[in-house]
Image 1 (cartoon, rainbow, N blue to C red):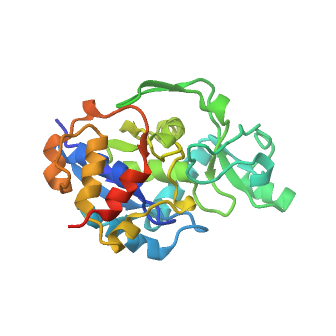
Image 2 (cartoon, rainbow, N blue to C red; image 1 turned 90 degrees about the vertical axis):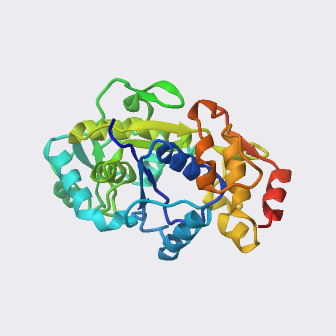
Image 3 (cartoon, rainbow, N blue to C red; image 1 turned 45 degrees about the horizontal axis):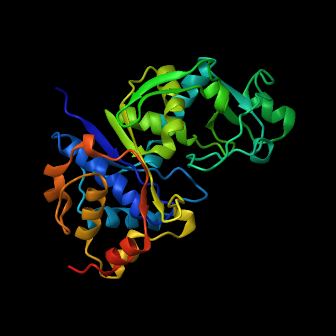
Amino acid sequence: MPVPVGRLAPSPTGLLHLGHARSFLLAWWHVRARGGRIVLRIEDLDGVRARPQMVEAALRDLRWLGLDWDGEPWLQSRGMDRIMNALDQIVRQGLAYACVCSRNDVASAQNAPQQGDQEPRYPGSCRGRFASAEDAARETGRPVGLRFRVPEGAVEFHDGIHGEVSIDVSRQVGDFLIGRRDGAPAYQLAVVVDDAAQGITEVMRGDDLLASTARQWHLQAALGLPHPSWFHLPLVTDAAGRRLAKRADDLSLAELAAGGSDPRAVVAWAARSAGMEVAERVSAGDALHAFDLRRLPREPVRLDAATLDALRAARP
């Protein structure tokens, strides 16, 4: 059997929180339990929100949890040529077109989508309108992006947690951006190119990105790249059912560490929430033997005030 290769892929746009901790621990356990490799990728292409100091913060948080990885951290921005070459390939194949629609024009986020964000379907306003990106810029005087021509019909794939999934990208979001109007590659394309370059065979992440998988499937097919196995985890929410988010200043791992919390308590909380039988304090490595994906609950994990207080109060 080939050795599984997974990845941890934080973005340096804010501090990691307990939801990230659970996802990263589960991804690490899932691969390490089968003797596989884990690579670390810093997804730092969001020029507006990415902050250099958050790169070191993410590394520090992952080490605090007791996680390791194989090889040096992979900075996505250092592989820009590779990603742009893939973008050019798609354009040459006639599978993308120039688009001058702004965010306000389509009220659509240009970065990694998050659960709860409403992304209206792109109506195809620029499809067939311009002969090239250069013509679009010359005729309109506006910044130009590149949209992937989404074929009609649903993408069907197996998810290791959700089972058989069918998503019709054409109906749900229409043609999506693969090249942003500021000249940078979009999230969906960058992830696909780097997963292939790093030899990723499986992706475990939050199920807020389940819809993105269908878009990435289309791009992998267009570029002739393999499809990894996917596993989309139920999210961690607060007591009211609200998804934890960096932009909402939720409880961060850095705050727990600074307050003297024992990381083994966080690891134990994440493990127990995934159906693993472990002690109240356990290291990531010591919990490895207890991992069993079949025991993972299929509903979101709620963090109530008592749990948060207990994690804050936990001392080594």
